Image 1 (cartoon, one colour):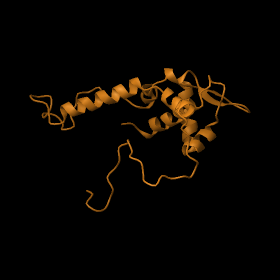
Image 2: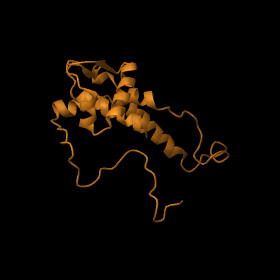
Image 3: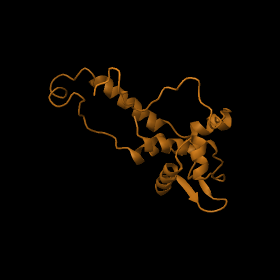
Image 4: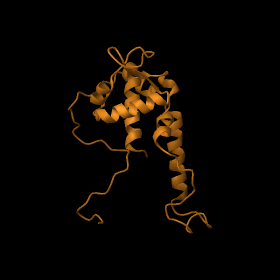
Length: 169
């Protein structure tokens, strides 16, 4: 669905949304990196980009740090997505030329269109306020650093096939 930079931007913006109090509370790049288990250099780089695009405000020095530039209700997932991703507007089919688009649609055509529409809706209709509400109104508590779940959570990122048993080389 999206790449590592977008994932990191969402992690950063979600953390800043969780502590949203009108922009008074600021958090350092190091604190965000530690709280989200992310590399500090990558968080600093993404924060710079988010600052340049007007999604976050940053201030250096003692008492400085980062805060959302506006209410999390006004920042959608689409805002973060569009900074780092290019939406493919083409009608190219994964089967390649000559199969889909000439005559009847391919076997996946309608399902892919539905999936793309669902992703667009998610990006457009989901604001970062869901993270603020989860923490401030719902009582969600961040997990302590170093605590690992008993079973791995399902990921929503594309995964690469494992090398070895039965994998094509």
